Image (cartoon, rainbow, N blue to C red; front, side, top):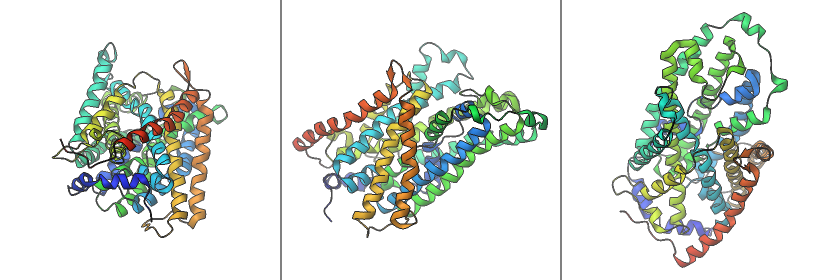
Length: 462
């Protein structure tokens, strides 16, 4: 079969990637841990769902959204990652299925969406540190701490894929410990009278706001695919990673909220960052401090793992000839694309200052559209390459593949509705999103002009 242009360019410049692949690769458990941080990073961020929808609404949302959003996406990622386990992941899938134009739009939407997503984690990092040192939340300190976190993650990523994966495994264990304690204490201190008196706020719930925040808390299933060339036995590892991560993340989101609901604490008392206050309520200052440390770990670990996956996109785009060759330069010792990592870090550092909800809903729409392109690639490849080896298949044949696309498409449609009423500074979120989406084809035209003048060549080591 004739390869798409992007595939020819990428493989022509892929010698360094092959060399990097001979290094020790990421095994199953570290990949599960990295996926946990990429998608979840702990229960942090679910407070706004409880605040908007109450306990009953929050639990219903966190039961349904994984079924109608996460499960279809994880199945799609499992099939395509196992069938095409190449560096660049979803960019490669879309390019192979629909050509270089749509592959470029996939990369553009992902990188633009990441600007809004990655801005959240330095902010959360500073927020939880300020529980220990309140003075650090004022003046120039939030900027210094946020930039410091980005710098540490940049250095950590240059150290190698296994460094990120193994640290994610350790950080995940430390992060979840306090929540195990909180669940146990909340269940032990449940007050039956308070439970009986607790109102059911379903009628007044902000369902759409809660659903979009839940989607943001459950986005990123496709991101681990970009490091497939650095994963041990990816055809087997990715489907197992998706299944294990989905079960773990559903449990991590549902169990703490259900336990606190069972205890009788009023849903109206929840605020952003409220897990620390709940820890203080159930376990005193020591549990509050442990949860705050977990918040610091969650923000750091999520940013670190996302940096690992997202920085492979400019790398493979460079190998396809769309970006200057310098972005493909790798560290000689670790094989990591240190220029791409550094450039992304600088870009994300400029995204401070917007509110949590505004950032989340914009990220859901932009990143969600890129996911819809991946679902389209799933269907196109089923039709155009029926004999492609697929160690894992979405069950049900072509009809099953179509079925898993339906609910994610509906949810992204709801994101359009919510963005239309969401302010972002002095702008409307939907207008800003549409402007960024429209910029994709224009930038593709510029990139094609650059590509014709400077075809991709093998990336150089420093």
